[in-house]
Length: 295
Image (tube, rainbow, N blue to C red; front, side):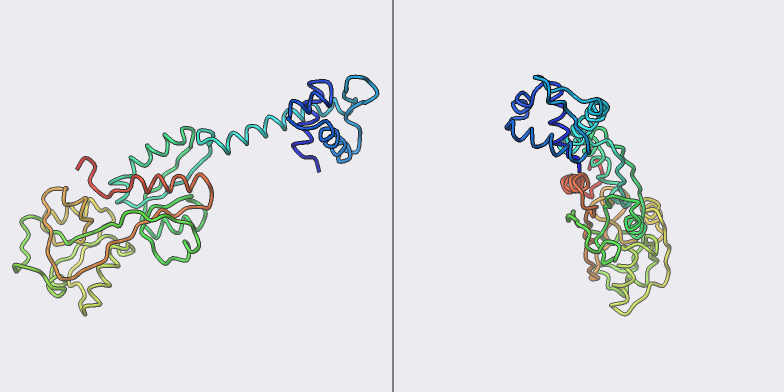
């Protein structure tokens, strides 16, 4: 089998005219160069150099390979540069994120990615967690920014933890809660509830927590847009469990105090096991903050 070291030896012997000069150029011994040329000739089945002259000269068959040897070395150097340099990566990278990531820190992350990898061809998809996981399992995404789940699609995949997404019950400033003080799970269930899509983790968290307290919501409105959901709440249609840090600065919304505690959603960057994806996952860790931009 022809190796790059054998090709490199042949290239420099031809360029410099001797095995000794090639050995000095490659910082090795003349016997090593001679051995590499012998192994190359054995692999090819013919002599590459005519050793009957004082200066090492290519045979007719050797001259026929000269351009191929140069092309192989050029490609080898290009691959080495690609592997060792962030700027060298010019391929596609498919990134997936939830709406809350898009509303908050995704623009800064994309800026950081393109600064680190100036030649990257970045493709970004905004979707719900289960859709992102499905695309990831189908190898349509290289990295996803979403809440951690026990999905089989993500089993065994490398990940780094991100900031938890803390949420709170909120209502429009003029909405009547029907009573003062801290609301119980029963009080919450009796109010019109606005939730994110039924397939979302926020919706599932609300339904599961109410069920654990023995209640189901009497009236619900589901919505596929977090911003549209907040607007409906602000207009007084009911209460919703919304990401706290972002929507406290939204305007026209008030936090509803309740005894029904719910855990924050633990976000993570889940990625393919390769160098570029792992570096982008670390950039996500550095830039994750679920606050309203400019707040």
